[in-house]
Length: 351
Image (cartoon, rainbow, N blue to C red):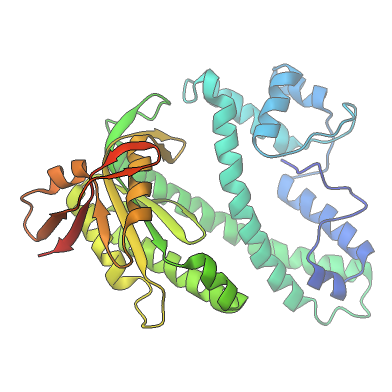
């Protein structure tokens, strides 16, 4: 599948690479890469790819756009490859087999596209840096020599990246299936879960005081250690957004361990900023890997009202944890916050 916003005469390139390789070579390299990844050149129009799969053009176009790919305004432009046809056929087959509800096919395509787009951004950045290093001695080489050199690099790297990506995906499928047995994932289903947030206190002002490299190091330590703490205690990361991680767990005891361990293990240095954590328990709508519902809003409000270095939990969470050995709860006075009629927070500490 292709991003058709790209003008073939103006390839999207890394500016450091451009300094080592002229624009003509970059144009040819991009064409080579597209052919290598997608198994051949663009050969089908919008109408032809829809006819090949047996659907109308409007349905095919909706799915391409949902996955994050632009459409050429010229309906007769050759835009699609054989791999694009196979991908569209796969989506339609999943719908026909009942794995995807017909009313959810666009939403499913959008969720897949957004997830893979972020992954691709990171992978291209990583591979581009490697290519830049390999092409530092390209001055004086012909376009054909540079194309051969880049083709060799991609031939070595892409299969390895694809294999690793496939393994991690399968491993997550196995793990997620284990905790979701008996919990169908249609759009109207909900599950009783603990939803939690942890964010870095004073992040906005921090970004104005430190440099990009130091900020990158801080975020890497935050994301790496928080993910390790959450996974070790039987939770899972829903998403990370800058200075905040959203996570979930099935057990309030596991979530309590996650919340306190985040303070103990994440950003532990004296000069590091503190965290604040909020946990709430209740029914959550599970939709395309994300969570929705009042429990999410409650967890977010608890986090925003928590003092640095503390864990605040909601009343439903406190009721579930009450009597569990090893934990102490202290009730705070109720608070009125936007979007919630009354927030009844408890401070969670180890015994």
